[in-house]
Amino acid sequence: MSETVKKAVIPAAGLGTRFLPATKSVPKELLPIVDRPILLYIIEECLNANINEIVLITGRNKEAIEDFFDVSFELEWALEKSGRTDLLADLKAIRDQVCLMSIRQKSALGLGHAVLTAQPAVGSEPFAVLLGDEVVFTEKGTPSAIAQLKDQFEKNSLSVASIMEVPKNNVSRYGIIDGQLKNQIWDVTSVIEKPSPNEAPSCMALTGRYVFDSSVFRCIEKCSPGRNGEIQLADAMNLLAQGGSLRAMTIEGQRFDAGDKLGYLQANVEVALRHPEVSEDFKNFLIEKVKGLS
Image (cartoon, rainbow, N blue to C red; front, top):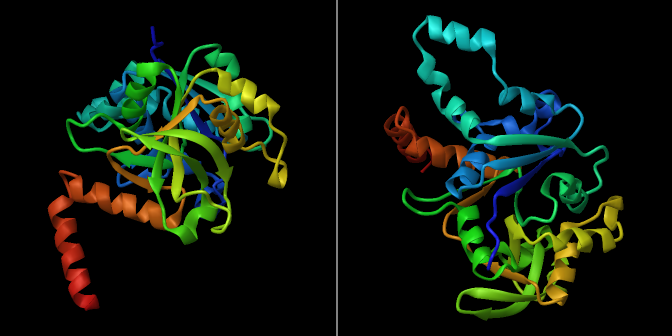
């Protein structure tokens, strides 16, 4: 019988150098997409998949993340006094649903090391991993990205990763898989971290959503540090693949790399066009802006 995925790990220890100076004092995971921080969208994605035990992997100067989910007595009292409790209603509802744990990654030794840091909280259970600077939006009524992976994992208890096809000249920015496609699911035979276009076995790239069996921890422990002294999660996934224990699939939804300036701006546009307060005015603004550029 397959195990149910109840826990999610969100690595959020990165320095956010691509957004300096904004991220000098504000963690990139708390940068707003319109009016809600990136991290809130990711936790909502977990809740959509009935995953409510969240393990945050944080680093130095990331205390603001924990504070965000804590009770703010002064603010909440002031809003209640002014009759504007609706402004924090969504946050309070999410806070009441999740069990949030925080573990500090003492040294920035790579994504693989960040995931390994979660082992004391995860134990021998299967778990999801969602990168803290990627958001995936799905249409209403469609399972969230991590829910789609969770459903696939629970069919056979094999680790599964989300993938997307990228242009050949962009493969050096991603982990790239090799394998065979069977009924829309890839049997992965190898994973290569950021290969050159000539070395890449395909154009199918890993994105920031995974569901792992706990055996991934043993694989990470076997990996030696690579470039910049970092332990790569892709190297551990390659060991899973070589043992026949890794699958991959494309997910239904729009993915944005909100840790990249362009991706962050695109995510804001997407959310603004859906936002009940600003969508019409913002759409009209974009139309007029485009007209002015033509």
